[in-house]
Amino acid sequence: MDNEREKENLTRTKKYKSLASNNEVKKEKTPIISIQEFKNLNETKDLIDLGIDDLNIEKTKSQKILEEEQIKMYKQKKNTVNKEPKKKKKRKLKKGTIFNALIIICIIGAIGVFIYSSIDIYKWHEDNKQIEKITDEINEKVNITDINPDDEVVVNENDEPKENPYWDYIKMSMIDVNMEELKATNTDAIGWIQVNGTNINYPFVQTDNNDYYLTHAFNKSYNNAGWVFLDYRNDPNDLDRNTVIYAHGRWDKTMFGSLKNLLNSNWYNNLDNHVIKVYINGKSTLWQVFSVYHLPTTNDYIQVAFNSDDTFKQFVDMLQARSYYKFNTTVSATDKIITLSTCYNDNEKMVMHAKLIKYTN
Image (tube, rainbow, N blue to C red; front, top):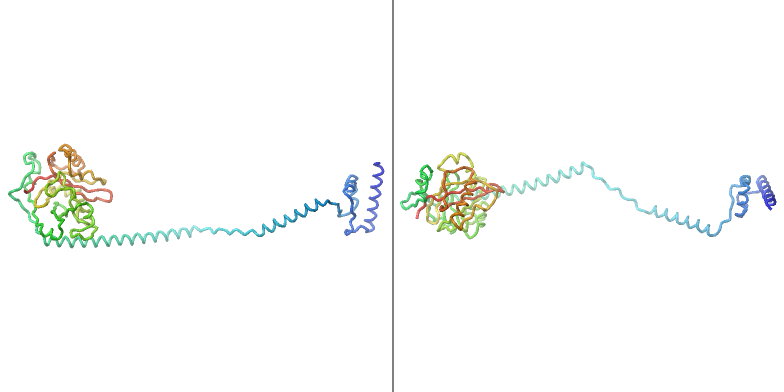
């Protein structure tokens, strides 16, 4: 059986060789062989000798359909890729552009700060002019005189040591003020204050709160310089254990701005500076300084009423312990004191305390 097949294959091979040599085998008419024949030829390795470039092998319908589908999918995929929009490249900002933008922003910010500051400075000067004008008008109208009345009352005369400067201070004059002119301008006017060695020489007022005169002048016009005022809790007719007076600490040393001078040794070394003169509701008073200091903003030094003498004495001891200088002043549990308070800077207060040593009935 195998010999017969081999003979048949050899016969067929000779036939194809003959056709190829006579140019009878053309590309358009490539002989068609079955798959089985192809396998047989492959087994005998005679395909090489055929000299035929293309062999059309029968294919099943499923193979043809598969190839067509693959071609179709390839074309669709190619078309889809071609239709995809090209991504735009992001433009990167150059370092120089960013730097220039920052410079422009800084310049605009600086201009804004300059304009805002200029407006503030302008308003500050306008407020000062108004305060200066009001002060001049008051000084022209009001007459302040030094007095040594016969009815004066000296406080704690028998308790003070002989070496204490108290004995020199009680010989000093007090002030008397005609309040009629002041009350004609402002009914809130209740007194006058002078502090030696400073620019403090003003009438002071009192209303029902501690806010109004922070932004209003003596004539009640709106002014950020404010005015000197007595704590609304204090009784001007019967002095409390602690009488508290406030004012702004202005840069030009107006209002209580010159209280900062108290920290200068020149002020301290002049003993005549250690007194405060106050006229309040018809009474002339004289006060001896016992403490000056500045501290972070707090309100523990403006207490006006106390439950007992012991509580008051503890309070006074705290104030004396804070003092920038040591004053040769004794303060007892039965004394009355005065407190002057102002701003030292945005976060601190400048404070002065003195005790009552003399007054008129």
